[in-house]
Image (cartoon, rainbow, N blue to C red; front, side, top):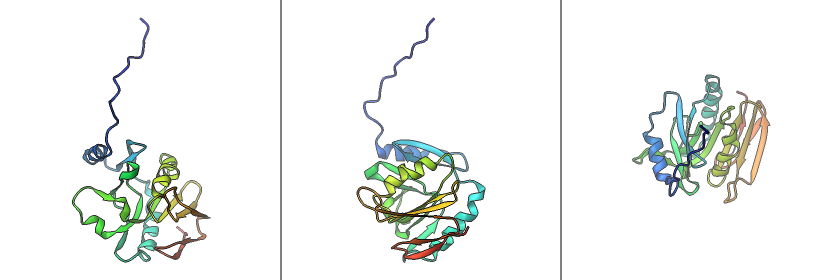
Length: 190
């Protein structure tokens, strides 16, 4: 008998963004995993490796000291929604307006973010450098890509409807200017 592909009836329309958000929120992901909406799909990926803890903690402390009034730096696993892009991300580290966490619900508004930092891994590097860069670049004032494989930090800033207009890359240990709303030079020694 010859095997043939059996077509499956296509969905009349892809699932709506809000339906995907609800599904992601209701998922019982294993400990140490997070669910995000990337490219219109729910993607489950592991939290960062243990060796990322120290750099994340150091960066969080340095950013908190310079955060805009009422904004807090954290690494808590919160899903930030970007409805215009139909995406929702759980950043490795974020700085956001504290009022975003006074609402009911399970997803924070991406507009509350003043900074996002993603720590690359082999499994997330593509999304961090492409998908997330595109979405954050339209709204979030500062996006840091901490490239753990290449030992570099890239600061994207000056968002626009077409993405970030400026970027600076330094090797770990070199000073990195973090623009408004932070406006300070970051010691990248980690």
